[in-house]
Image (cartoon, rainbow, N blue to C red; front, side, top):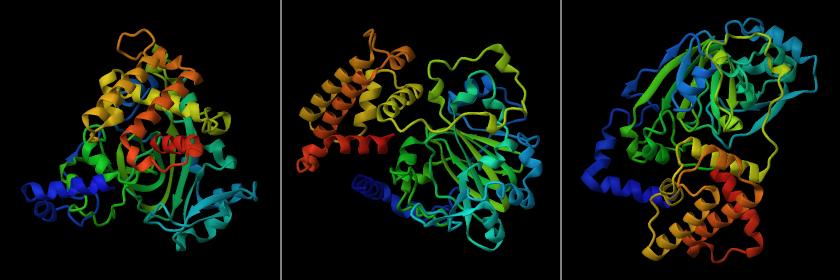
Length: 415
């Protein structure tokens, strides 16, 4: 937070930038309201192979028109149907947020879906819950995730249900995301993280939770001066439409009318090293038999070493295959004296050599796949030593007995 403040102060001092940001047409207006705007790419058909090669790998968003119109849920999910099905599992409760304008510290409550249906039109309650098991039979896996090994990437399916008028925080997701709307309209504002990394990193100032502290209805350009550099995708998702939101892309969502949507969160790294699809996946069509109740999916067991390996895979997928890229990833723009910098780089070279088995200076998919728990533990130990070098003054008073617990907690936040 201190570094962010100093960066803001520096921007203000150089060229009187604060007066410029205060006069910006977007200052104290809703997030993304001033443009400039880019055109979102739109498709009417998206086979699996094309989806992964043209959009997931290069991290490009795409709007899919009329992609869930054939789903049973699209036709059946009126309040009466949801109510009747809820009574088949009367003890099952759904998680409800208590404010339609999202805050990450708001209270939540749990009720059976049939009780929520009685009051949602006259309350601030907003259902955010895994698709209940008794209606998974109505939800089909989207076409881009259906062919060959693609279904194995599915992580979570989150149902968002309200009477409209909701507004999310500006945030990024932990996973790749296909967002599909079954009723109502959602207004999306997207920012390409990889095109605007410096500004995006300033905006997403709450690292635990990966969201921004900004007021999305009244964005303070003096607090977030780099926001003036952003280009936006701003558009509506109508009932039947889906949107692929790449991992790390900044986005903010508003909803209008009775609003029902599902996030299909998926973890691309689950098929790391096995992400090539055959010709049949270049032309696969929607198979309505692939409903959620026929699939086995869910977050992987909370295994620390597995999660760290996923982190390495994700960085490699993002193009971080060389030692200089890993040095930049770990050290970033941190100000270090020559001695600290030299020692940190020496240790990061040692870490890289543990992954680069053939010593050619380029991490391959197979090398990452072959990392075992011992190697990962050694890599983690080196990263912790580098962290100690960088922050040695603030860590002098830490209890050594708490080291493993603190290491895992810090890494979870980074992941």
